[in-house]
Length: 112
Image: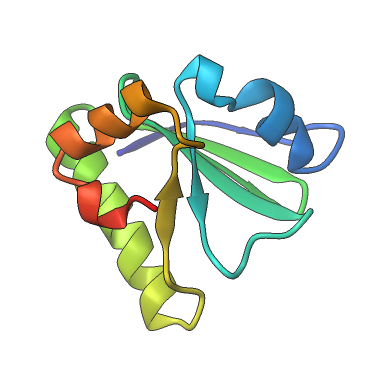
């Protein structure tokens, strides 16, 4: 997993929810009990990208292949579940095509 970008957006996590990481752009929200105006995470199974916003910092990670993407998503879910932030789930916003993409990667058990 390559961290390609770290930047500091002007705003909060809702900039990602409603503009940058929408289902129309191929992103699903990675949900945990940790979600708040200052924290959020999103994943794009086609581009193999994971975006995290935490207290004003944004990190974008690009997987080099599907296996690396799946490993990173499973690692995220395990960490959140093990540290009391679970259940970690993938929210595709009832977007059928996006749901199918996560299922095709073997991540169906993490979907709502």
